[in-house]
Length: 469
Ligand code: FAD
Ligand code: NAI
Image (cartoon, rainbow, N blue to C red):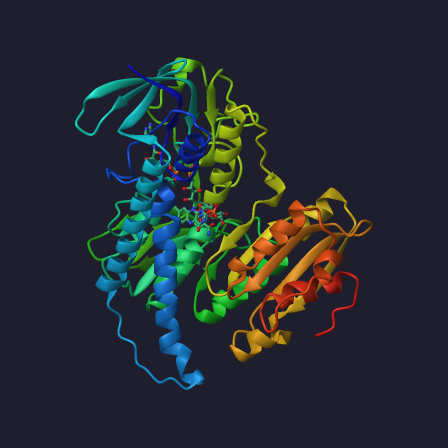
């Protein structure tokens, strides 16, 4: 029986980062991973069917859209022709390089990659069924569960990955749909809806709530919806889907107003179901160690420890935002705690990003959250129309909004909408980690001309001395 210090079940951002950190700290570590959808590559959802392939298509489709619709105003006249096969191929190449990169990092950090499905059979014991059906047993003092999540289903809407797809199917459609219906105006719906809209599809998004992207600051969400609508995306809010019927050539979707009223039938070439994800623990053997997931299927933890001694859980399978960088932070903190160090995750400072055009990025509290807490706060805001770099690039959409405590001036949240804001929000994450005041950002020299100057000008606005708007 192979003996380890730590066995990690799952090779996504939670699992692979935990394995690497364990290797760095000199622990003998195995990472058991069964791959995604029968595949045999490391990286979990994020690398194989999540963050990376979606960003590959978002980038390529953005370039296509820019060439078709925006190059001319810069004096570049081209007529782009879509080669969808090549667009999919370049996505697969990049994903392949990234998953190979994790294999390299495993070797570098002496992590044993054990291919197969892991099942906990008792304290410190994991049984692995390999791709060839062979069963081996591993033993360790500590086991880390990082088994991730799967797309949530909707009664009456059967995903066949042909006409009715989830995010995985939507990353590999064989053609540009003439029409695409998206169920759920969340991050997946808007990112993948944007990809296919840019390539030529008529995209309609059906959302249960009366707003898009719940969790996003409401003012930003309104601006975001307006912008997506201007691009041609159609929103049907406060609407519930009651059924979907697929044929060989398309889908009909029955939709009803949430408040009651007549049902209508919408037709489209394809339907994307994107109403959230659920934790994945099937076949994991939790019962063998007395762990019962909560009502929604999450494994409950206290500082990454489950109720069973020596068993830990991180990433999408446990509470918190289902984000790769949250899984990564928990991986490091969990392994450092196992190694006797002080693990820590700043849960209030986990950024969120929607990689559309415009991008939306935020960290910390929204105005709605601060109001609900009854916390007095000040607002500083700066529009990209007043930012010189945005102006010369003809990319003036959006703004930066900073929220700071009314008494102490501590930055409580930052909300950004506009091109490239995904690369800019990190500045506010660092500021918040150091519990900076908005004045600290306002008095920090920023390079000119850059879009990042908008971060400073917005911070100046908290004390009312924005200079360039
Ligand atoms: P996962 O990545 O799901 O990995 C779990 C791994 O465990 C999988 O390989 C699975 O096969 C394996 N496994 C499960 N059970 C067993 C078992 N019993 N034995 C062995 N192996 C097992 N997040 C971001 O931060 N940024 C983004 O841009 C982003 N884009 C996304 C786009 C899409 C389309 C989707 C679907 C998700 C996206 N996410 C994004 C979310 C991100 O992918 C997840 O938050 C992240 O992958 C969670 O990591 P994890 O390690 O917890 O789980
Ligand atoms: P989501 O939680 O972001 O959004 C789901 C949307 O569907 C919500 O607006 C919700 O109100 C709506 N909804 C729920 N039930 C519905 C119903 N029956 N009918 C109509 N609408 C309904 O979930 P999504 O988009 O599936 O993404 C899952 C998760 O994956 C995200 O929450 C995020 O954690 C992660 N992700 C992160 C990305 C990023 O960081 N850029 C990109 C893609 C996914």
